[in-house]
Length: 493
Image 1 (cartoon, one colour):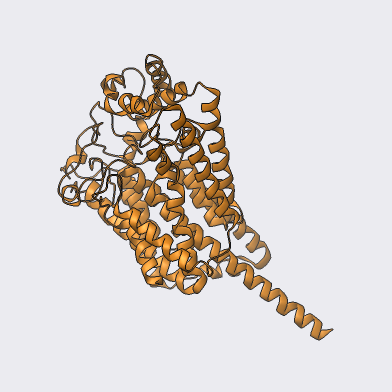
Image 2 (cartoon, helix red, strand yellow):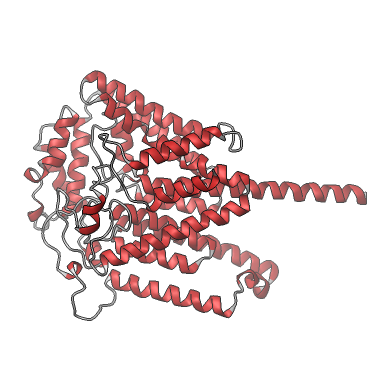
């Protein structure tokens, strides 16, 4: 049973995304249901209901309440809305499943789950390199492969996963795997994920330096760095891996240039059209495995080829795009139903957002599309009940390109408060490395619907379970050491 759970977790992180004949259902839904059933059959080894469990259930409950209120207004389909509302609980199942493994043998299953994480890291990076650097359209992405998606539905998912893995592997001192994650992160060309990883790693580095300074003052330089002593072979491998990742990152950032020959579609210059938003494809129908493995699917908003992260950062316009998007949204009558919103924000968005003239207007195609939808949502919330309960889950479609605005759009003030409570539970009593992973998640959530994305959240709940089990084991060891010390003191007395 335990190996089945481990296999299910790995599939949810790298396995193919397959649709079922039943509309709206995927193989992943069945896998999550099977995982939940296994956890229920073995619930006693996991734990009693905790504050985390109640926080997740509160998020789902407020979502269901908002769905019912919106259905009462007649603005959306109640069944679809309820399914959207319970998605956070669906992904949370990875947490008790991982805990079930870790509570059976913490040290053993921590090592085995690290194998799952290492496999995920290598496979995602390998497909990312093939897609972006060699322009081979193989994978399951819903978007064109002008940016790497790895084994995810889009670059935003690969960026979020890679950012979390970079932080985890650096915290563990696994430099080879950290370097592999950096390569995948660079190939995703996800600006917010790169920024999120940089901030989290900076915090992790500062904390490490503070600890080392204190250790040097107490023990001296030699003893302070003794735990980091490695064999020459391991040091050499780590240096080569980090150096290779640094060169790849420098090339992707545009800091160095390669030879003047074509590697494929990614060497063309950017075209003045809107690229797909980073989370716009998170819940759209998945193409068949054959089609996605042999051709590069297109989205409703074609993406321009991207040469480097530097070109994307150089073209970034936030304030300019916000102002232009506000004017465009003001000229559109606020939608009254989810169908009307989908028609304006997705089906006919090119009728309202002229991506071709975005640069000349002082904006950027990607953020112009994102902020147009944001303004459209904010202009639609004009009723006190909508402020309290939101527009209802599923009203704003597959994505908002920002988790925090989606909290408000889906559940209003009640939804925001429920999510804030859950975020507090994420940070509460977490080890410092997990706090840094959470920081990378929360920064990415600014412009990505990351908390509603399956693979990033399955990974996050898995890491949180490892942090929880590791913290509990550490506390148990400290308590045992204190008991032994107290016993020795009593004997000496």
